[in-house]
Each structure stands twice: as structure tokens, then as C-alpha cells.
Picture (cartoon, helix red, strand yellow):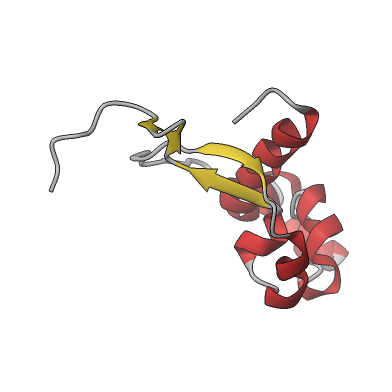
Amino acid sequence: MTNSSEDIAATQRAQDFQFGWFIDPLVFGDYPISMRTRVKNRLPRFTGDESALIKRSLDFVEISHYTTYYAQKSSIDIIGELLNDTLADSGAATLTFKDLRPIGDRANSI
């Protein structure tokens, strides 16, 4: 939402938790570092053999992108300690509005 270092880091974490969670193991053999740091022992660990097996194991990735979000540092870190869920773990809040304005034109959908 801003160019602050906190919001830039939150934007990367939001991408890691939404996209990197699935893609990073298939490309790099492990989850993103930001996930390892924040989720800690609740995130499963790959053995060396498992990591080698899945690393670079995909031939093609298709992404159907429908919605874009703004991201900013979440202000609920204390609650996140109790919730233990993906949104709280990321420490990022994603929004489709900034200053009460949508991120883009509304699509022709219901």
C-alpha cells in the first residue's frame, strides 16, 4: 500500500504464502525462506531425497489470474500468534481497495 520497507517485505511474504507455497518446492526443492522463518516447525520439512525428487520436477505451469491485491504489513501480529493460520502467518494484509478506490475497473461479472 506504501513504499515503506515494511510494506515491501509484506508484499513479498504475501506472494510467498500465496504462490511460493506451491511453486517453490517444485522449482527449488523447499518452501520460501519467509515461510520457514514465520511458520517454523508447523511447516513440514522435506528430506534430502524428497527435495531432490521434487526440485525442477515440473514441465509447465499455468496461472489463471483473476484478481490483483494491494499488500501491506498486517497489524494483527499478536492475534496471528494465536490463530496459526496462513493469513496470520504471512504477516501481510491483502486488499482490493486503496483510499476507498478499487485496484482496477470492475469486470463484467456478477
